[in-house]
Length: 499
Image (cartoon, rainbow, N blue to C red; front, top):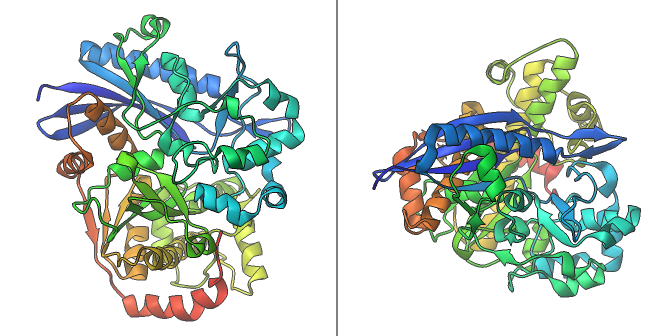
């Protein structure tokens, strides 16, 4: 196979990147072309996304890629986080500054929504877990606070689809990100029109849904002129970053539910790959989610708060004059006393606290748990608690599928955290295979390659990832101690955790 270049625009909650994927001889090599910061912008007491700055950064990255790779570039595709959106007018004007999912306007809105449509009915339609920032509740919040803006909208686009519109003019929404909205029917795989009518969400603003790998058209002439790119294709990958990451899990067990993944970063997404959404009463009781994947699969999973706990503790320490890199924090955690403090990582007070360390102490006091005191104890508390929460979620998912998970794949930035990987193996009593770190970019690039006819099915994609990645296996150790902690200390406090 001759060398071909695919450009992945990968936007995360903390940073964005333009990455070139070089596919040759059954292997893929990634090269970061451009990196830039991302994060919420405080605007008059609200949290927003600065999408125009992000677009400017994307153009800068594409310009650098054009200079470096020129005619070798085949296509470009964008992936981002889920749930957030942009509204366009009939004349393609952006309506309002798009909200950040951690903005406080959705507080209490989910409960108001249940007074209009019961929780059970919403789950039957959508199969999605109940989180206060789901797109459905963001739109209900807009109805309550600014109904005229919603009435003015002509088109609703998820965040990656907005950037695809800027690139190519397409006005569609890709399937994997659409499933994060809690507005997509889990069996029809189209917008849940009956449900949305009950919430008075105007159906005409919702665009066509397309599958991962859809060619959306060539880049706009003005974008080509600005960046120096040839008129390459714009291809929708799995635009939800977790969808792309799971496509790049280096498993040899595609089509089975006896392996699990943890897409580990700011959030931890832990689940299995299934062929159809699981919509049973038991799934509702566990508050799991069914998010779309490659080739019509579903990702039966649960959101766990993830390394956000560590990131925010680090900011808390910095505000007090103690600056660490993540390696420093991991070392301090490794040196700290085991099992001193265990918390529920998914307590709602951790979603957007003013100070994470204070929030952890407050949580401990409310659960009669010894709070951490040193910086190392705070980080060890977060990592041990995440590992125990993973086990709890995994056991619940196994009960839904009837399959025993034999191995856990950890992908994404969190796969570099050897201490958390070992804790996860110990807590779950299963081997953990860590890597690739760049799973999202790999999944993005390889779905584009498949759209170009340069690679085959999902199994072939994963074969390329496996051939291209350095993987590390963590075998379980000290499992008796972890099992005692889980059964005697974790479950008595957090047995009924659902959200």
